[in-house]
Image 1 (cartoon, rainbow, N blue to C red):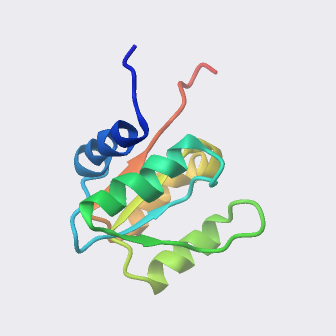
Image 2 (image 1 turned 90 degrees about the vertical axis):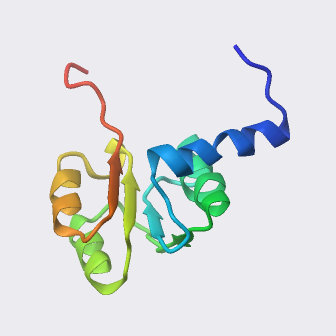
Length: 113
């Protein structure tokens, strides 16, 4: 275990933006995590902002809709995308292939759960 302060947490997730999400200053990054999840903190706020990337936001008031996601990707110049398995399940791979992404990160659950 490592003791973290308010400063080290944010600085630590610079590596998330740099190495995991591969963000660059000219990227438009869209993360589908709900704001209550820890993933939202490091994949929407600390990682992208420290790398100088633009954070794309879409107000979604209902369950995840893959058709809405594909339409959004066709309408906006999103270059990097990240989604948890609770958002899109098996459709994540289809969405990654359909988008013109430089980077597409998906966190998957083990198949035996």
